[in-house]
Length: 258
Ligand SMILES: [Zn+2]
Image 1 (cartoon, rainbow, N blue to C red):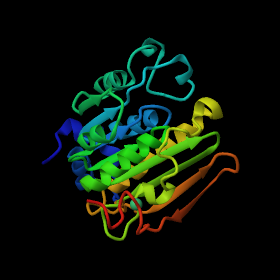
Image 2: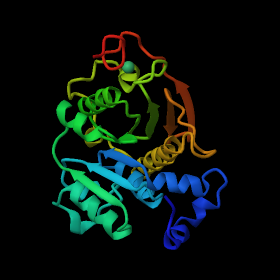
Image 3: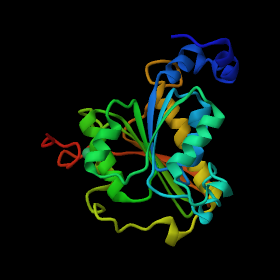
Image 4: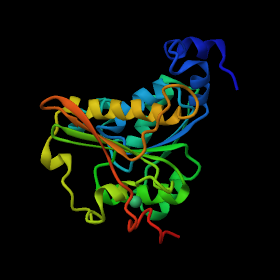
């Protein structure tokens, strides 16, 4: 696979980076990323991932655009209000770069649908706001052997973690949060509030890390950093990173997984 002169020009600022290079850009063009959640995290993440030339994108969200989303969900404008987020996001990508292959799913994720959606992907990025979906996506990723980048944000705190629970030594997202949140009882930004740019920081950091994962083994920037979670603090501001241990008794990736 090689890039056309138009694509070489479009991605010139990537290609000139020794850490990415032509090999990295060609690799990105051949990758399939599934983005679950097209809200405050998914919006800026998708903008940077589409801009990075990731060849195939599957966009997943069952929600519709609401006026109160525009404070942080940068993909959308007033014309999109009342329309589905998935179809609106696809429209954005097609205007931005018609060469990218985009599929959408606008139905609510359950365990079965999660398995279908993640099958064959190179990476899943989850930026949804409820634990039931996050855990269903995580379990599906472990079963399918697909890496997961999990990103969350609330108020002024964000977290982005890279998980490869299908590997014998690496934790999954369920090892990190446990089973307590299987029910949809968590706080959401509807109750908590959130500074819009905080979602932007977490979403763009998730896109940065997605590129890092997708370039693992391809070029120098590639370094998946599995089982590590980055905490982003918008008050201080600052970042720190910690490592999650694999839980041998984990329902998602422990020994008794079929
Ligand atoms: Zn696990």
